[in-house]
Length: 115
Image 1 (cartoon, one colour):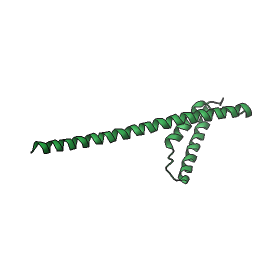
Image 2 (cartoon, one colour):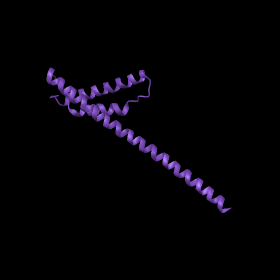
Image 3 (cartoon, rainbow, N blue to C red):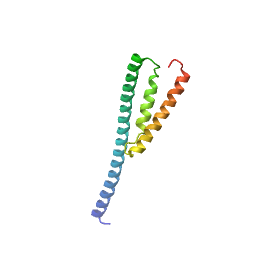
Image 4 (cartoon, rainbow, N blue to C red):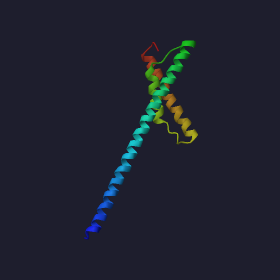
C-alpha cells in the first residue's frame, strides 16, 4: 500500500473516531448541564413555595408541611415534566405529579402529627 494512501486512511479513521467521541462527550455534558439546571430550578421552586405557604400559615393559620415535602415535590416535578408534550398530556402529567405529592404529604402528616 502506498504510504500516502495509508496516511489518508489513518487520518480519516482518526478524525472519525475523534469526532464520534467529541459528539458523544458533548451530548453527555449537555444532558448533565440540563439535569443540574433542572435541580437548581427545583430548589428555587421549593423555596418559593415553602415561603409562600409559610406566609399564608402565619396570616391564616393552619398546618405547615415539613420543608422536605416542597423539595420532593419540586424535584419530582422538574424530573418528570416534559414540556415538549401537547398541552393535554402536560396537564395529565402535572395532575399525576400533584396527586402523588398530595399522597406523600398526607402520609407524612399521618406519621408526624404536628404538621
